[in-house]
Image (cartoon, rainbow, N blue to C red):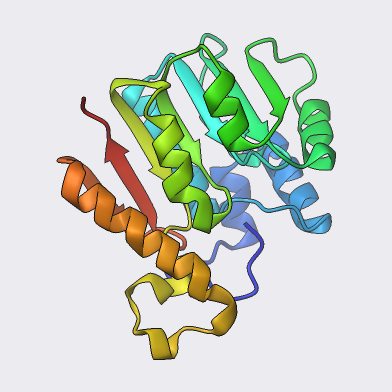
Length: 212
């Protein structure tokens, strides 16, 4: 996403490394996102996502907070996977649709996450969430009705520039509400989920393997 603070774990990629690690289509969407100030995932998170889906090989993917489609591109590891990508910003959704013209397996939805999750009848085995951080707990509540047993759920930017683990006195006021909601959500995950991990990638990535 757009950073006003430094991402605590992100590595720097030279232009040569970008060309070697990412194809032109992804880089086009990535640069477009930055030019239009559209939230976009970190490059190391993009590589992580690509590795995850190629390893797990999910059949039905849900993305919450797709922006212009950079992360969607990394999730689309084969044309046999079905992807539903959701964003509440119409400008971003329209750009994403333009970027994915001709992709029959990807559907973009202009909707709020909680509304989509309450109304969809589909079930998913992989979910990527990169939305408003204070809403992660609420999103998780609704997600549980649409994910399959054994599904993998990835939450991006989970450590919020490292503030999640800092003392309250060290956190800028504008991030306090988000940090408090993230802490509540993190405590819920720790108490109720057996299989989860918090990874030092980008601004922190939390991976939950959901079990009924």
